[in-house]
Length: 353
Length: 180
Image (tube, rainbow over all chains, first blue to last red; front, top):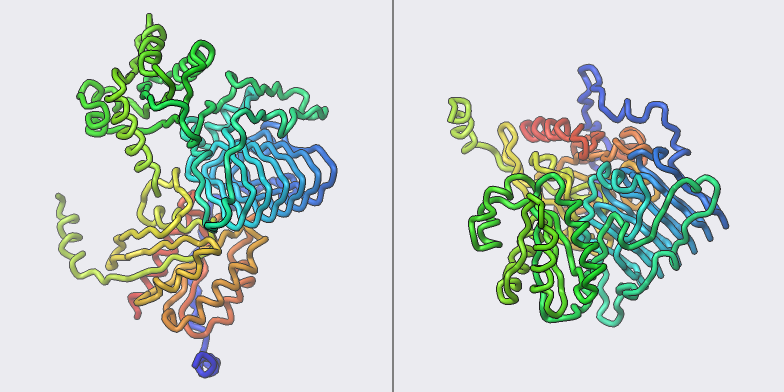
């Protein structure tokens, strides 16, 4: 049937019409590429080398890595998108990626990276310290291990902003596998005590000597979260910082204060999300926050641990002394449970699609 | 409500409805194009696990656009959506040289489907904002579009991210479907 049809159609004239009768339109990409050399934005066919890019040299463009072996590759800049293809035994640091990172046909590699979308296909034995603003997906990949992103260098926070990647919306532990196999789990969490420096060392090469990298957990631009590992306790609490222009800095100070004086409390997850007055009413079960939520996105954090409700209440009070910023803390364990559910259900709904 | 809105509302009752299928490999930018068509925010798009549907109003037409996930594992399900398709949009990541052959094979298979026979084809050569993007004429050549004899087709360079070229594609859809 198909065969006869294609023969019949052979004598017909192509019906494709040229639309371009008027002046060809100028698109922004015609200008964007001017003066840029493609070869500056690609690393390929390298072996046993340490190489990369320093801040300002990628500057929001696409970046490609192809066919490398036994290399340490550092991209200390933000980019539009990155594809990593056909690499073996390589370690990567990739600065914030505005859209997607796509890792394909790679084996025995380690990554520290942050992005809007994380995708892999046909990969094997990959470790990733990840900050991803949407649900990470893997396909036809196995031996994938994930942990929470940790990194600092002075320009990094600005690189996150330029790429539009939010440090509080990290879904590193919530993987979707397109090729689920009932007999084999293709992904797992990295050990909780996994240290970044054991996976990718700070580069010593001359060109990176001025980077001032720190792997100190309290300096990391992305807060370290527990993800979907089993929670240490049955007790959780919700802490929300409202937008007053500096809520991100305040949230970080709070996280650091909690880490240094209350190690029994674990930061499970964080989320930065915009709430409408009616959403605030539902989550907090009061209209007290209906006005302030209109000032911008709020940062919500779930803490877990025995007595964490009381601990966070006390710590938040200490923390807010002499400050005009507004913070919400669950007042009891029973309220906390519902508030966490309402807040994160709402946030996840906002994130979907 | 202004007079114009009123007229538009009265008119929209007679709009022709079109069922449009939006296909392409994973990471091609299908959902970003869908949201761009619907003038929605494109800054937090997640990889599609099933499908997304949107109704897009364009002058004289109501477009019901079906955006189906493109991972290799779920491509066999594309055929579940073929029925009654008025037009096929196929999205290419113009900056993904490694998979030009794969995307070309998938398109060839689609064009051989009985249920899609004769349906006009709009190819979006997407991601033109990326440095390594191939120009639309190169993509067309790689896909062998010139050999298509059994349907109307068009290739449109676009960047769903910067919202350029998408409207031009929409114009072609309107023009093509009016003549039908």
